[in-house]
Length: 207
Image: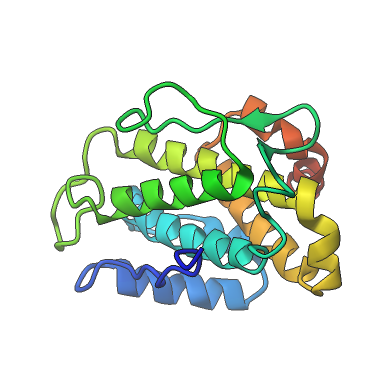
């Protein structure tokens, strides 16, 4: 599937996105992820959520992209996170009733769906000062909930492969950053996090 390595999304041009991205890069460089996820003083929460949503989308895309030859319809006929959790796809528009699809198909649907959201200026305004919709946090929560499922699938189905590719440190850092961010802003319900509960507790409890 040639669509897997998508062109990297960038923050809205001419927006505060560029400044916020500099802030992210600077704080991430310090190695203190807890600090890196905090809303910078005086910044708009929606701007901060928007820039980070694009970043996490890019990160998950790249991580999953390294696994596409292993995550196939044959190896992963359903989108699971261990034996107890299976995810079905519905976007509420084209597919209203959740359908069972292979993991790679699920991720493809998911990334297409997120890309459509990010490109929709009524949801993610590109112009400086353009208002965010009233339900913006709900939009972001749905995106993060679904991105989490990709992490859950990677950890449960492909972790050995990640280790053999020597990517586990990178995966763990990306996931830790993702979890601290969602925890900071209350973006994912606890029950959704159940498939990776132990890893998540090891991330959040030490603080």
